[in-house]
Length: 160
Length: 199
Image 1: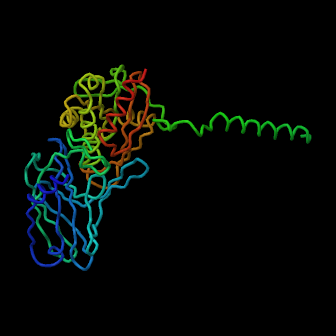
Image 2 (image 1 turned 180 degrees about the vertical axis):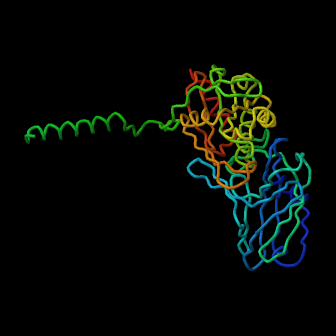
Image 3 (image 1 turned 90 degrees about the vertical axis):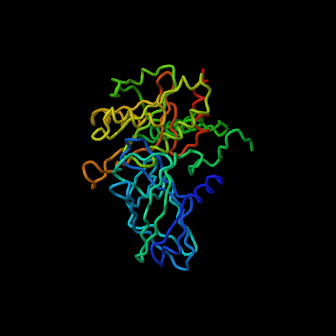
């Protein structure tokens, strides 16, 4: 996971469109899930850290790989997963919002073409003050060890 | 009713309660691997791209059943990836005795051909099936699976709420366990091993 973080950090070249919330928010470990070639949708996940003194809201996302981009959350209702579009994702002052499998995510809907592993999707994040930021997000085959519930991490042959 | 009869009735109820508690209450019993309230489960025949598939086709194997849909951007791929990684921890002999069946509850969009390509991304051995809304509804009822198309969305872009558990069916076709969404691969492998090695 550590090593992955470094790779993600190295790959995610973030550029701010103009000053504002976009300057305060740093994106860590972004990735788009590599989906089956005929999957109509997939998700993008990332950690949004707000270094600013006031809360920021992510209110929209756009990307050129799919026809529609929405902010979503999952509610686990007694084993039933209910995915819902959310109007905004709040990033507290000096805090973070975690977009991860099973929870908040940017949903890429109606893919224009199948994504391939390693492909970079520029995702534009729009904030509540009108500022925006483009994050170059790599398409990754998601390894289950990186999943939230997989507390005991799997590291090949290593024994802990 | 005479007071004697009333007394008898009360005693009978008390005895029934005490016997019930004595029989059912097992404070020292180990926690069961499967929840005691498993649904009935049972047979089905649904359509795959390669023809009809029945649960009984997998007799002698541990079969993992997952009810989902391919429009699902996160929950279904997370589960299928975890199953793939769990199976990778098994020996080839063990792996040969495990089947994974992805049952689409969204037959309007998920044709058997579409499902075949979708599940092969995770493992070429996974089987993707679906059926008529009536067949799926009846089957879901027996497995305690909930699914419901959400209002809104276009006819090709809607969300389906669905039970995200994986069902483990034993070599004899009996439903043995439910795995919660997010069960890590090593627990998937451990559960499969447990049921493969059961007498």
